[in-house]
Image 1 (cartoon, rainbow, N blue to C red):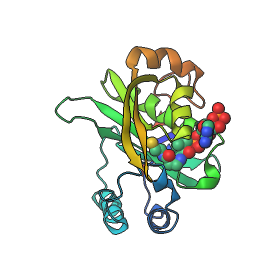
Image 2 (cartoon, helix red, strand yellow; image 1 turned 45 degrees about the vertical axis):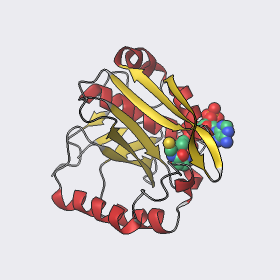
Image 3 (cartoon, protein in one colour; image 1 turned 90 degrees about the horizontal axis):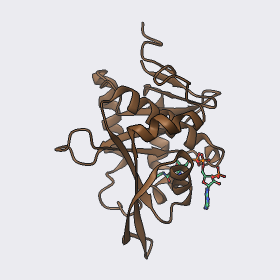
Image 4 (cartoon, rainbow, N blue to C red; image 1 turned 180 degrees about the horizontal axis):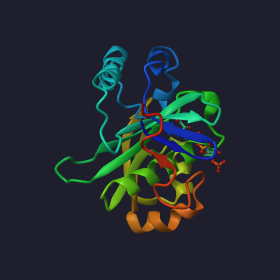
Length: 207
Ligand SMILES: CC(C)(COP(=O)(O)OP(=O)(O)OC[C@H]1O[C@@H](n2cnc3c(N)ncnc32)[C@H](O)[C@@H]1OP(=O)(O)O)[C@@H](O)C(=O)NCCC(=O)NCCS
């Protein structure tokens, strides 16, 4: 099992008991979908399919190293969201973007997202032989824009009026961070250990 400890968050692998909460986040507490790619109304996929995918991850038990996603817990063990990474272009080996969601509204706005993303980016640069990591959002998502800013991501692209959201056209925004930038910036990030990779225990919990 992979566990990455920060100051106020922990990133860890999916557990079977998380599925009930995922069902809640997909069927009831769906407000996060207004912020995470809200233009994907047709393509997001339904709750049942998303839950089946998570179920398969648990059943196969063969998690990729390094991980493609981890769950976010608060320091007191409350499961509040997840981080992931996605190919931008699978033909260009190593071109990844990161994403984050805190469906639990009460967990937002107190620094957890910034720390969780810092831990995730730190882990990925430590574990993957990559030159860059990207992330993206739309201009109406001020919390995500602020997180990118706080971690020191470089604004790389603005596609003007490309994202239709609830009747308005917003800009698509993309950021990137290079390995050298990460090495310099990580010292100022919340929760990350002084030595890259030291906060991650890939064997913790293994029986
Ligand atoms: C985006 C998200 C992951 C950020 O996590 P978080 O824990 O809320 O973020 P933090 O508290 O670390 O930082 C958010 C910052 O945005 C600021 N912010 C939040 N809403 C804002 C708004 N409407 N206008 C301006 N700033 C805003 C906060 O004040 C904070 O900045 P500060 O530390 O300078 O005060 C989380 O809010 C979330 O999951 N939202 C819903 C789903 C989503 O948007 N997912 C991302 C899709 S790209």
